[in-house]
Length: 510
Image 1 (cartoon, rainbow, N blue to C red):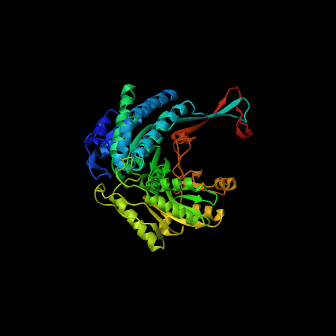
Image 2: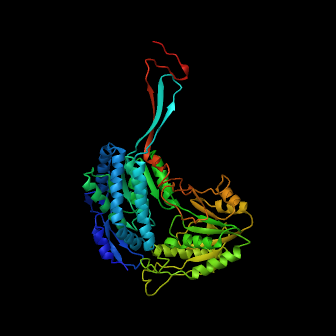
Image 3: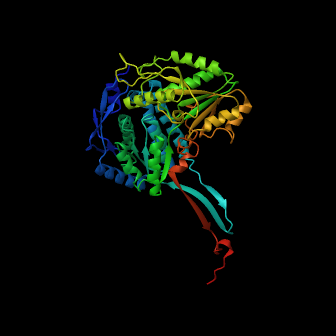
């Protein structure tokens, strides 16, 4: 078991922490936000909420930092990100421990989240030398056209509790090499993770004598988020959270003609065909449904199983669920940790009741655990419910370990069922049949941003653009050409002759 006091000390996290920061300078006049661990219900520490006056100072600092930072050559900015990645390597263990303790995911998942930060830094370093435009042929003789990308400005990042550090770094690593500076509002449910990250960044900033404000931190509830979404000095807001939150952010940012990168809800399904390898299918379905206690946006919510293997899958999966060990996520012997808080527990219980009311048949019973080791009141049993896709509760995303299982007769109907939800993040098919796999990946197959074959829904990795369609928001992060959203595109035409031919052959003689 970890020594959390030692962990906090290594990361420079104190009992009381200033919630606003521009790097080396901090601000802490606002009221205190309490960070409570869902692991044991104990208070970890406090972070101050950013006041309106502090917010103004922070954004002004970031705005002026941008004017200096954008003039750094992109490979030089990449070198700074490389150094940040090295700091993360050195701090992987304590930061992973804090993620696990403050958010409640398993220690291995906490360490894995920090590894994602390291990986995106590596990706961004290479990207810093590949911010390519392109040259085009002009219709005008003696002219050349080309396209280039310029830094965008101050990027606002609003992140969720379930990935309290990685999602921030997915954005910052790319934004920094693109020449942007960043202002981060973490979830008020996991603020100490953000304090730790900013402390690590501050070391890099100090060692390289960087402009104050390249990485900024603000803390608070939705009201601080509203300051960001309405602020025209932030041309891009990257927001991760619920669909409800995304609707508000998208509208507010659009009012001022800003850009939004939205990563919202998922209602992810796995299609299990008659030719699926059931050994890997059960493992993939199990981890997808109960990993992070069902609090991933890519968590598996629905299993769509062919009628010929339905009973076998049901039996194997139900048996596997009985072997799950629920408890302190910092212990390697446990598979499932707690939900984030007691409100999440209430939502979990309500969802089960709604499913029963609509006709769902509970295969693996749920419930809240109590007693020794479960003092926080946030530990729940993963649930499997036989259901129909049209149930109202099945159409909704519940951030909890609830898995709905249903039958299908032919692949077309299975794909239709999978697509027949408002969310469009992640999807998977389990099959050894090439035709089934290719159909699933075709334009008439999965309508999700992520479509996997023989791997679960939560198998995203750095390098591929992460994000989804429909009410998932359409944003893309962490790979491919996602860097372009952090830049402004410019088309240039150069005349290298003594003549000036006008467009469409227009003659204008003086």
